[in-house]
Each structure stands twice: as structure tokens, then as C-alpha cells.
Image (cartoon, rainbow, N blue to C red; front, side, top):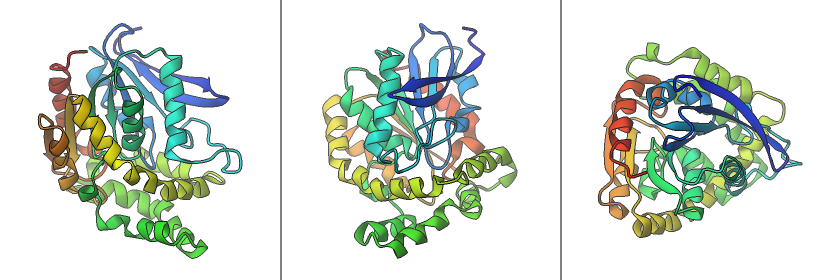
Length: 289
């Protein structure tokens, strides 16, 4: 495999199609990139070429996102446990024996579940606005918290606003000082896929199940304390959902964690991929794969 080539692949995992990007030398140390809401592996399109000379990159689309299958909620239970099951299936199918993970947003609770289930395989963790602490949750979560407390139809329907084109662009632009750095195809692609028939309801199911991630925070912390994986946090410090104290909190359980902040918002790679990519390369250079 040419080191500068990105291959766009898909495979069947437990009967569903999982799309993934693969790049870099097959025998090189592996890095698994996990995206968040409402995006896909497309968010890593600029980072992959910065890393694929020295690392074997795997970047899947979660079930319900990107080009992976998005079965109806009548045929698939949309929980973070289930999303993780299909990433685990891909890891097993590709026979990834040792790998680092990079997590963002929804990819964080998926990646941390994966790490707890495979502690012997995880060589390092990179978190780009991938929260694991209560202090990282902003007031932007209040409408979702309201639904957790009272899962009424009214509160569920109110969350549909989170899936609109206006909200998707708001997520991309909030905290960004130079909007011209944000590629329009990023939020347009996300919205095109969000607007597929039935997709909003499955996203609302995941909003509801996000409470399960917070319930697992103590287990994530225990994993960090016990295994002490090399850890890098690269954080847009104006993220409207995941606050800087959430990045600093990793140091409570991982005293050697490296935490770096960037003057940008939630989708930090859109505006600061060069700076973040350089930090990741420097960090991975110290990891004993």
C-alpha cells in the first residue's frame, strides 16, 4: 500500500456495511480514528495525509453515520454500546492487535468503551474534544438533560432542532475566528446525511442514550487510573459543548497527560489541523507501540 494513498473501503460486520478509510503502511503502528456527531470519517480527511507516512490509519464511519449502513430504528437499537460493538467487529476483522485511538465527540464514549474491553491492545489515546468528565459538559447539554429526566414526546421533539442545517453550521462556526477556514463541504455533507429519511429519529435515540456515557464516566476513570495509557488532549477551547475543564480533568487520573488548547471551536481540525497534526506526530513519536 502506498503510504500517501487513502483507500475507501467497506466490509460487512455482523450483517451491516461498515465504511472505512485506510491509509499508510500495513505493518506500521496503527491509529484508529473515531468521529463524532453529526459527521463521519470525512472529518479526518486532512489529518490522515499528515500521519500516513509513518502510521497505519483506520477511520471508520459509525453505524448510522457517513457511508456506513443506517438501518431504521425498528431494525437496529441505537445505543453507544451497539455502536461500539460494530467498531469492535471491525477491529477483530482487521486483526488489529495493537493500536492507538483518536476520539472526538461521540467517538470518545465509543473509544473509551473499546479501550476498557481491550486494554492490552491500546497503545495510546488522543482526545480531540472527546469528553469523559462531568466538568466538561456545558449548558449546551441542558435540552438533552431535560429529555433524560422527562423522556416525553414534547422533550424529544424539541431535540429535533439539534439536527437542522442551522444547528449543524452553528456547531462548525461557533468559536471560530475565521469562518473562511471551515470547508463548506464539511457541514453540507453532514447535513445531507442527517436529512436522510428516518435519520433524525435514530439521532434522537442516541441523544437519549448519551446518558449511558455519563453513567460510565467512573468506569472510564478507573480504566485510566489502572492502565495509564499515554494520553494527549487537543482541545478547541471555545467548544460550546465540551468545555476546557473537561480536558484538564484527565490529569486527575492520568498525571502524565498532555493537554493542549487551540483558539477554535468544536470541530478543531477544520481550522487547526496543521497545529494539531504536528502535536499528534510529536506525541505518537514518544509512544512505545
